[in-house]
Length: 403
Length: 110
Image 1 (cartoon, one colour):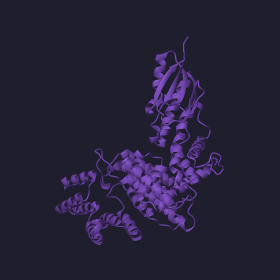
Image 2 (cartoon, rainbow over the protein chains, first blue to last red):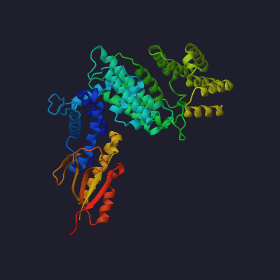
Image 3 (cartoon, each protein chain N blue to C red):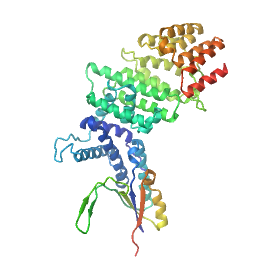
Image 4 (tube, rainbow over the protein chains, first blue to last red):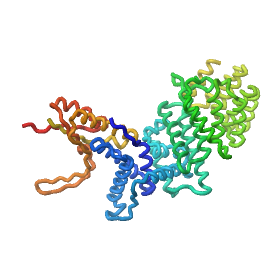
């Protein structure tokens, strides 16, 4: 069988981006249909005539022709119109348009969930049903979200361009953040199809790599994010037991961790240290790197982890980061110190953390380490009340029976 | 003996992701490659949706039509020893996996 050198997924993203950048957001749906029909034509033509020498260019030209024919049929362009913004195939222009599409998907007018869906749909070439499976949602909800997001972009007057000057840096941060959130959707989702979820994680990693190597994405924070995602991804197989239940970091079978991804992670982490920038991805990657290096949970360099957490909550304060810091402090300085910090952290943000399941599981874990099992049980019962997730419920219930 | 596979009404495509489309292409390529390797391949094409019908009264009707179920979207011409062999080959045509129907026709024998 003839081996194709083309990836429809990549071409879908590049060609769609180029067509939308030339024909406008108003024609995005028509452009999506045109790309789909171009693939269909390829399926009919290539087996008979052989694969064209430049499959990507063939698909682009065919999709563009289909789109223009459609626009003429709908009288959006007059039959003899000469102001049709058709353009020849130009690989660099396609790559640029794709990058601009990425910035567009991370537009300020969109909420996080819409950005994730839009990226997966337009840039990762996932079908609506695939996205629904990955994000534990229904196909209807996902397609509505995509429709609304596209409308919002049109209403916000989002344009295809490269952010320049002051805006470049903040636009870049929005892109990295969007990819980080997209990865978390796949990584943290505590139920759903494991295979689909690892796909989401891999898509996010591919996207950082594409962004990082683009002419505008080269930034230490992008390297740091790459390192962070690779470290997390390396552990994905060990996070789920055979019966589908969650496995905590302390109990994970570290022989399942993917060594190749871990060493790649360290290479990116090292590369991220150029320049003065210390993004949250730098610090989170450094923490993840400590775990990746450690032979076991107990043998982890907790002193170092603790220092990184101090950096993280100092520079990028968040209640969740502070909660995790309690674990690092408990391991580095002793459980009592961890508990003391936990009380402080929860007192400072009782409204949010009181409702947060893992604030209670961490409390239970600390109490259990001190042998205060009755109190630990109480904490875990509180945790049970704050999750509706079946897998988490089972995890906590199992823990309770062991106490 | 020459046979033709007429592919009709594959309508599953709109829902497929690019990766699934590529998988479909690879199946068709494997199908065509097998016909070539076995020395059976004569011709194949995808057909445009436009139809011009020319009747005895000289009336000309023009497509494309909304109803694609009966529309022939492509064909494969190949050789086989008999109907049995040709049918077995036609059953392997990927169109059947994508909601399409196949009409198998043979050259007229004299």
